[in-house]
Image (cartoon, rainbow, N blue to C red):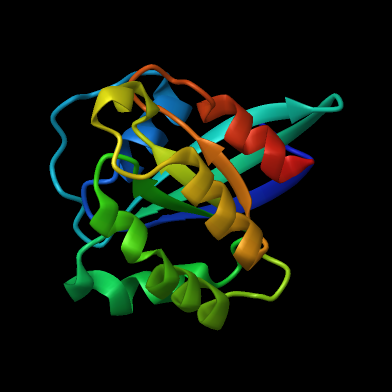
Amino acid sequence: MSYAYLFKYIIIGDTGVGKSCLLLQFTDKRFQPVHDLTIGVEFGARMINIDGKPIKLQIWDTAGQESFRSITRSYYRGAAGALLVYDITRRETFSHLTSWLEDARQHSSSNMVIILIGNKSDLEGRRDVSREEGEAFAREHGLIFMETSAKTAANVEEVTIVKMS
């Protein structure tokens, strides 16, 4: 299938925040509760239409473990956007955002769009990071902010549309 534009995204963040689940929900519209750890990088693609134009999205899901950080850095090259993901039920994943953001800005082009994503919004009762904290971090660093749930698909489609707009 031909397309008018090709956009590359990279998904970054600590291990276990739901990066692979977000990719699977976006590309296959399904949730897999048990997922192996990503080793290095996984890849997914999907065609979408915006303003009647076919657009191919390449999504690179990176490993969150520190030992893969040097490999992950090479995937920033050519990326139009990054999804910086944390788990709203695990404060330490929020605390590590600054380090991930520094990596993204150092290894990507200056015009790459970065969306901060608080994932697992379906676990509201176990929330450890408030929505306001996420919004404040995004505002402070010039990021777009959304909360999603890879499990229920809440805001998963919207993340893509925001990036294209």
